[in-house]
Image (cartoon, rainbow, N blue to C red; front, top):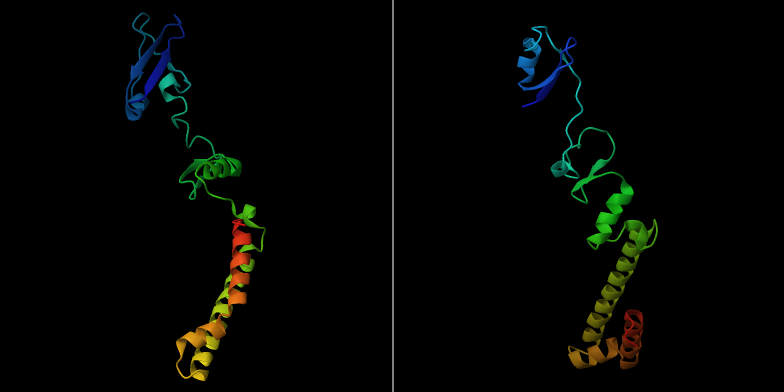
Length: 160
């Protein structure tokens, strides 16, 4: 319930009253000393130590926005980025530029095409060697090529 503050213009006495908004609009407060109507003062909202930084002022200004990625209200994009970094997320712009997604998808498509071609070659070799799987595998996956690919993979991952 709001606290309304009143002041008597005759004796300068002040008083606080707990009442609903409707009651404050309908009632005239009379000074107990002078029997004169008091006037309502405009009071600043209370900000106690228990309310500091607890969001008491959220909604009082139009600054900031609700960040769906952070799951909370933030004052600006920098604050949102700081929160997301503290949670271990990487900003999209740090992943490799504007074409990161397109480059990544192209790379994955090329990998898939390579695997499809390898599978096709294996099936052809299996037919060529009349179902002999050992010969088909050794022909499809020559040892020198497998060693080369393993070395490239290890180098890429930083193992070598």
